Length: 116
Image (cartoon, rainbow, N blue to C red; front, side):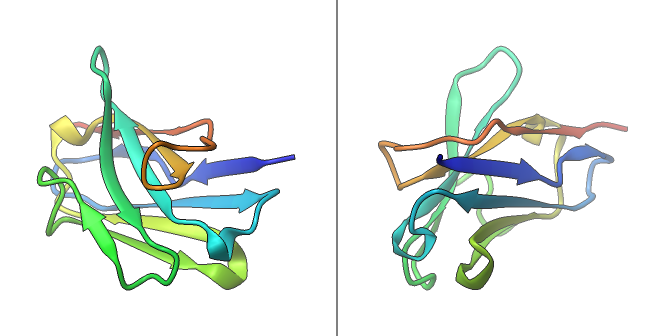
């Protein structure tokens, strides 16, 4: 059974930081590119960041570049999203997904709320 389980979301003040994690099982993580995708209230899905198999190739949406960092730990089957300088418009449900698009599997999402 394929599982992608996100964690690390929560309520944070503007300018704060959070670190999201996504631990996967049921497929070969080390051979899989991974992405983070978010959905803000009342809006569509927005790709946030992706990381290729070997890690060095990372990509970011313009809206998060220089504030978010994606990384992976193949030994722990986990992909992370370090988020800093968070803004209210970063508020969304964040999903991890297998692939760089289209996405083969999705997690259940973790809520990130940026508010004072």
